[in-house]
Length: 112
Image (cartoon, rainbow, N blue to C red):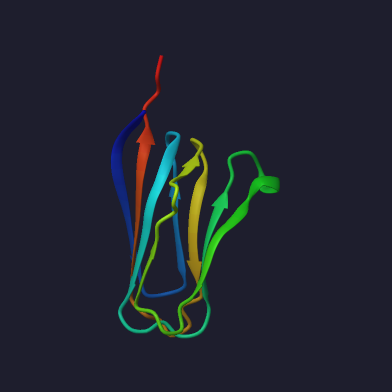
């Protein structure tokens, strides 16, 4: 059973280091990234920093941003994450583009 869908927004113009720390078990719906201009060299990386330790950290997706201004990561099926997991989005942003990152996720209701 799912619960409330929430969002977290991160904006900047330096190296991208956006993260979402989950306070409840959740499904990741989308990560949306917008750049002020085509990105420049380098890969945007979406990574799980697992609550269970570094042995369980995993790269979920990478995207070359050279010719992109918009990028949406929509896992299908939705991915389940645990309370305390951290989802990280990083990118070198050598061209200092202004960016916006939005995490959209749905918390899973506890059933007793």
